Picture 1: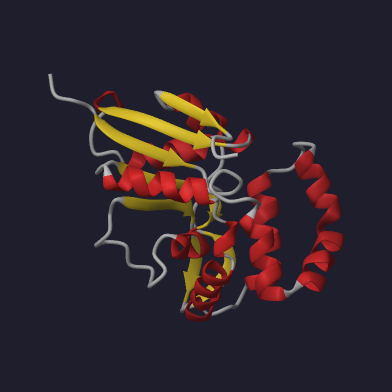
Picture 2: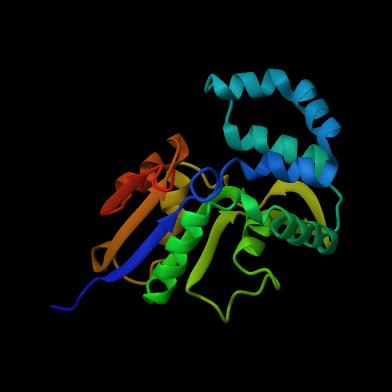
Length: 207
């Protein structure tokens, strides 16, 4: 009987990082004043989201659209690279060291995040967005809708949260689930299904 292929699933925000990168990204790219302004404008919606009376993915998309609709993809990606470079300290050092060891072992790593791929990827691939030649780490996040080289403000995929995390991972597996030994790491309600899906689940492991 052949050994199962080892796969590691890592949530990003709060698990690998010290805080939510969506808010940090807005602060970095738009400034603290506009971040506070958006919270005032969207506070009724955010309250409903916290009470589970409004879909968190839709609320997140509205907030994202407020800031970035119409931005060129080229400029947005440049901002994302700058964010990952200047905010590298958000990445927990213990988490970075652990992932480096996992990659060295030859195991497959999925970074499964509700955050947008564009600003998550430069934390792992600082020189660009083409990770086809470094496939040991795959970024599985919320993807943006692009039309004529510009952001529409909408998401092309569902918000990668909860059951969507499991669905997105399963779509990438080349063999039946039983052929894999999966270890998952998370820190919030949005990771519950992913942690349960794994053979081994770790809650808030790097703190």
